[in-house]
Image 1 (spheres, one colour):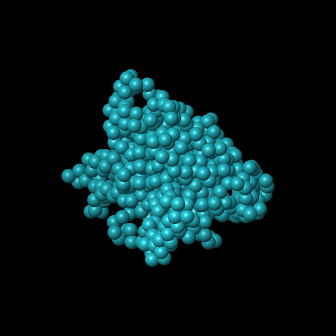
Image 2 (image 1 turned 135 degrees about the horizontal axis):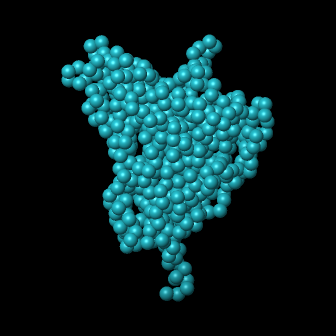
Image 3 (image 1 turned 30 degrees about the horizontal axis):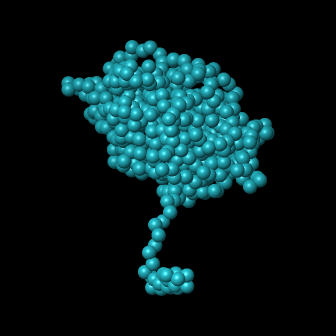
Length: 567
């Protein structure tokens, strides 16, 4: 073909293509591969520098500020995806997070004011700035929503103002608050959540609408039990060494098998005694590193004065004396890493500095206490009063361990002691947001008044806030009203409140306040702590830099520093 003929052929081909386009018959090229989450670079799996972490479960919700959301995976995701003003240092003290902050300091004594200066380049993965509105949103929710973790510090805040485009935030307190560094951890994207359907209750229920950390969510598949995190291109600081972190659910035997084959390089699980022994055997044949990882979570029983059946301290003391605490601890810890973390204090968890056992030794006879409270025991062994048997409702968050196991064991114990028990397991959001907050209309008529709750007590860094959030009262909204309980148990003792307030605001040392309060609180028989929840961290040699992490921060808080050998 001549040059002119070739030119003509090309023109004809172009004309045919144009006709096809006009007639709608053009062939659409395949779409480019686009990340499912803004700011994520998709790396082919065969080339990815990744670490796979085996977990007991990956189910949500993932809101770290709610009692319903407490779990190993929630702590892990929050540390990698959400920004914080302070993070925990290796010695357990709060350290300013310079990835987000320029400074944070008390700038005025009266009124007590803390000024936060945020980095101007800090932004969410959708490019919205991390700013004052995120502080305001968290403050408003923490002071008003039921079932939140340690709200006492947030309730001291009277106002939040901002300047310089929201990058300078001034937080004003009603009273001095020395524990202010424990606030505003794990900020949430207010611009996406404040008007979202479902409100606070649905915040991070099954996804992260935006992130502000070194990783972003590539996929979050709860039915398959897998969460894939990939390096975020929107992160303004030094990128992590890994391309990808995969969190994968499996049974304990499945996780151990995955470690044996190298399919998992890290595991963070709550093993029973048999699994601990199997891991020890695996360590003898293959080099493994292991570490106990205590979580900021103590399993406790709440004997609720808010319940008419347990309003009398003598009845609460009789029920508590009927409980075999050792048996509950054994059932819940299953001989795993939690077994050595018995909680014999009402406020400070066993692994935290300042912990001191305060539980009194007691040989109280529950029968004598029931008799003093006006109860008699029938021939069948059932306790009752005024012709009605004593029947209690024991509640635990559905599907959450070790709480359901302990609730079942408690039901068995109390039944054998002559107390009829109805076991109630409800979705966590419903339990903490309604049943234990007294906001569910008609609960009494429906028989849903919870007498005993098997729930976590969580320490977010300031144990004085734990004290106030667990045992404190709130001032009434109007003048002349009675103080109201500010906790899940419905307990409020006005004679103890001045000591609680003094510890919270720094007018007295927490240790001095606890020395005065704990003997009195034990007598009230409101809380029976059992043990601190702990995971076991297992790592293969190819996962470099893996450690237990700072106290209560979790191993995944250090994942930006992890490396995968041989990749």
